[in-house]
Length: 211
Image (cartoon, rainbow, N blue to C red; front, side, top):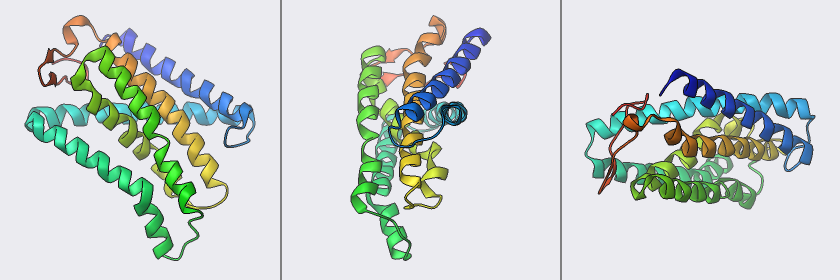
């Protein structure tokens, strides 16, 4: 990827995160905070999404050059299933078993479930853009890495009345940024650096986009 395109990706992601923070703050979708607080937090969340995206690209490259493609696909499905299980049930069980106030089970369940829907929609859109082999990697990134990026907010004072709305707003902003990253990244690569579509999906690329 050329330097100017990399800077464009970083700048537009930060602007998108800041705009999402302002909109969610002004509308009070989950949390009522001043617009400038939403601006700052949205920009911060977008930089976290960028770091998560580069971590995903590095992990995907290492896995695809060291593991058989079928093994890596099954590993992504297994990790995705484990993260879903953790978000939908296990984290709630751990807090209740420890005697902590974890709030309502259904509130915790919905908090882990609703990001699945934009992740599925984004993975389907990525499949339309890049071929059928890109659906699972896109779904894996959109759900698993959105949750990983949000872990500090998910686990800090879990179950308190203030943290539920904050976690939802954090997840929403990071999901918006991650959707943008996964959909635009391929368009910013030079034609020679784009993955070549094969029967089993695109060939792996290095984090800088070079095969």
